[in-house]
Image (cartoon, rainbow, N blue to C red; front, side, top):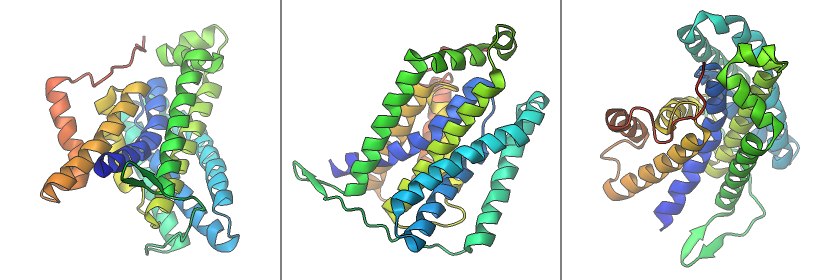
Length: 287
C-alpha cells in the first residue's frame, strides 16, 4: 500500500509538469522542452527564500509568479517568431533554451546540489497503517485541486471554449474575433506556473535542488504526453499517474534491475506498438 501511495505522489508531480506542455501542444503542435526550466526555477526560489527570508511559502508564491512570467516571455520572444518554421525548429529551440537555462542556474547558484531545509508544520497521517508524510498530503491535495480546476476551466468556462477554438484552427478563431496570441500567452503562463509549482514541491519533498533538476522530468514529460494521447489533458493526467505507479511497483518488486527512469520509455514503446494514438486521444482535431 505504501508503494501505491508513493507512486501516486510521484505521478502527481509528473502530472503537474506535463499538463502545461500538453495544453501547449494542443494549441500549437509544439513540444515545449523549455518548460522544464520553470521546474528548476521554482525549486531554487523556494531554497533562496527559505534561507534568506525563512519563508518557503513566499518562495512558492515567488516561483509561481516567476514561472508565469517566464512562460509569457518564452512564448512572446522565443516561440512566436518561429512558429511557422515547423515543429522540428521549435523542438530544437526549446531544447537549446532549456540547456541555456540550466547553465545559467549553474552560474548563479553553483554546480553542486543544495538542500532546501524546509520543514512543513504538518503532521504525518496514518491511514490504516500507511504513513503519509505532510509533504505527500500537500502534493496530492494540490494535484487534485489543479486537475479539478483544469477540468472546470476547459469544460465549463469561456476560457476553455477559447482554448478549444484556437486548438482547432488559429486562423478561423482569429477571423471570428478570438485573440489567439492572448490565449496562447495565457496557456504558456499557466503551464510554466504549474511546472514551477512542481519544482517547489519536488525540492521540498526530496530536500534537494541542483541545476539539472529538470532533466529527467523533461524527457519523462514527453513520454507521458505521448502515452496519454498528444494534446489530451485527461490522457496526460492518467498517463502521469500510471507511470508513477508502475515505477514504484517495479522498483519495489525488482529493485533496480530495470532503471526507474527507463520505465516511462519502456511503457511508451509498448503503447506505440499496441495503441499508437495514446490512452485517451484528444478530441480536438486540428483543421
